[in-house]
Image (cartoon, rainbow, N blue to C red):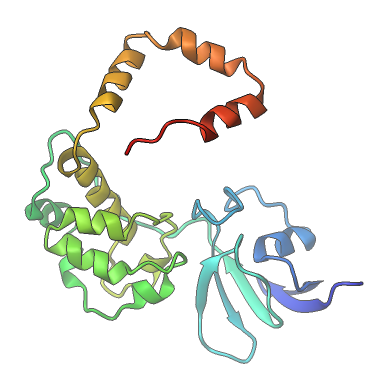
Amino acid sequence: MESKMVSIYLFGKRYEVPEELTIMTAMEYSGYQLIRGCGCRNGFCGACSTIYRIQGKNQLHTCLACQTKVEEGMYIATLPFFPLVKQVYDINTVKPEQQIMMQLYPEIYACIGCNACTRACTQSLKVMQYIAYAQRGEFQKCADESFDCVMCGVCSSRCPAGISHPQVAELARRLNGKYLQPESKHLTERVKEIEEGKCEELIQSIMQKPLAEIKELYNSRDFEQ
């Protein structure tokens, strides 16, 4: 059975593509060679941020090209990235206090509560909520709420206050991991052993194993309770 074809527009040019394709595979089907913005192709890296609208409709949509199927009359444009403000800091010197957000990302306090960031999120995260947590210095809650962020930046592209939501969330997760979460002592000990070279022989022996055996070792590993 032949696939049903739909008409899409890539950067203004019309193409006929099978309707079951994602935007990314439709671009390749149409002859585009994807060098940037293709990432992992499974919807978890955020590299393929895309803007589109449907013919005859004014609403602008954002998505990840690897996980969004084409539609009839879809006008598509991809961007290499959405610009985000990334502040430089030393995680070993900053502290999990509210003023660090005021110092590094003061624009979060200009949030007008429009919720455009949440509506645009490709992962369906409650973006405005985790920004509210960041404003109050509730970094653990911000970290938990933003845990599945893929840093695509689509939320920031729709923000009238110019907030770099993914960078704010990343800082919160780093502060949470560094200072707020209980220390995993055996992990700390293992990192020290690796730094001292004590695990080099074990690492080399694992690297020599067949891929199937490595996968089995990974899948049957012990989990921390």
